[in-house]
Image 1 (cartoon, one colour):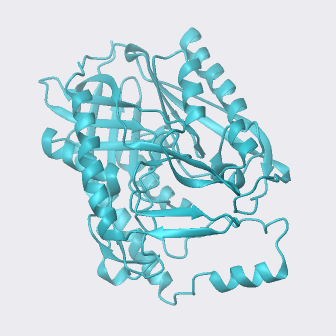
Image 2 (cartoon, rainbow, N blue to C red):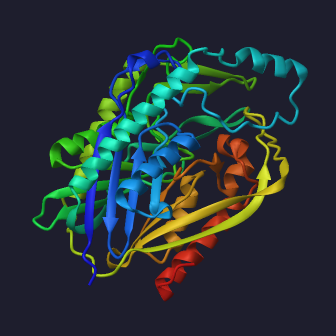
Amino acid sequence: MNHLKAGAGRCEIHFPATMFPTDGFMGVHDAPQVRMLMLESGSRMVIAVLELVNVPEDILNMVRDMIAGKTGTPRENIWLHVNHNITTPHAPRDPAVPFPPFPKETEEEKKRNARNAPPEDPEAPRKRREFMAAVREAAAAALDRMLASFTEARMGVGTGFCDVNSNRDVETPAGWWIHINREGISNKTATVVRLDSMDGKPIGMLINYGLKPSTIDNSEKEKNTRLISADVTGFACTALEEKYGAPVMFTMSAAGDQVPREQALLEVVREDGSVEKIDQGVEKGLEMVSRLGREMASDMEAIIDKIECSPLETPVKYASTSIFWKGKKRSEMRPTRKPEYIPEEEEREMDAHALVLEDLDLAFVAIKPETNAVTELQLKEKSPYKHTLLMSMVNGGMRYVPDQSAFEKGTWEALSSALMPGAAEAWVEKTVKMLSAVKEKGAET
């Protein structure tokens, strides 16, 4: 019999005052966190959540090396999930993936885009070192606390309703764009995994829900008066931690087209197709965070209190697979009735990694890109496991991989996607085959 062990830890990321201004931020309202969860049943697995908008590869590798070195966990069993909290800064001078030129970009458009580019910051190299140090210190503290709490454990899973999220793809006179679409498709089911010690004390919890933490979004970016915040999901996790006395991590599932149902920064498309930004301000955004965060915490609490935890008798299983799909150039980002998708010559790889716990009929599925809610619902419907938790932006990012209907409409996600249409559907089929092989044969694929 395999005896499950688990540990969890967390620590705030303390960005120094000398790092500001950066990325439009002037300071911190409430600090984002690094949270970690370690499972051991037959083998060891670590899931780390960084409450940041994006993390470049060198910093991801730094955190992975720290975890592997101190826990002995195989690198392939370490999942670093960046939950795409937009109310946090990118790493200064982040080596972002360059987008190809717009297919029909004129010389005037090139000049305009150059004028609108952010100015070079001569202090960026220093600020980046400070950013990296802040993440390293938080990860080290969370890691130590996770190891200190590591003990024999029981585990359970539960689901419930949460209406904090909303679809963001809306039809306008000029074509599809982003706003708040309460009538659009969303997955309102949240899943919580709970881990308790053998005497019933909470060790840690993991929330999985389709929501991009973007209540405040880029509000006041042009003014350089943004404030860092853990946003609505961070607010909910912190409130739950105060109640249960254990780390609570939020993992973003399919959130390509999923945002909070209220946002401080909205865009409205005029009749001529131009886009107007409506910025209600950071203060209003923080009020939304507080209100929606309390609601989300209450919904999660209702799920948590009903979860019954039990020991695991079978080992954790791992599997991975991938598809290769034709790459796509980034389309011109504007509302359009006639979207144009230009393929790249080379194919791109889209992988899937699975962590399966047969005793709980539970499978975690990790991917790099953001998918739409339709894709998550298709995966859950076809998966052989009762609970299939999709986690986006694990061990890196890959922009959007939307469903076929999004390409037909020409949504934001489709225009921005790095893959041609059909990838999401092909990925679901390949991932379901992988999960079915684990279920039927108990073997890695």
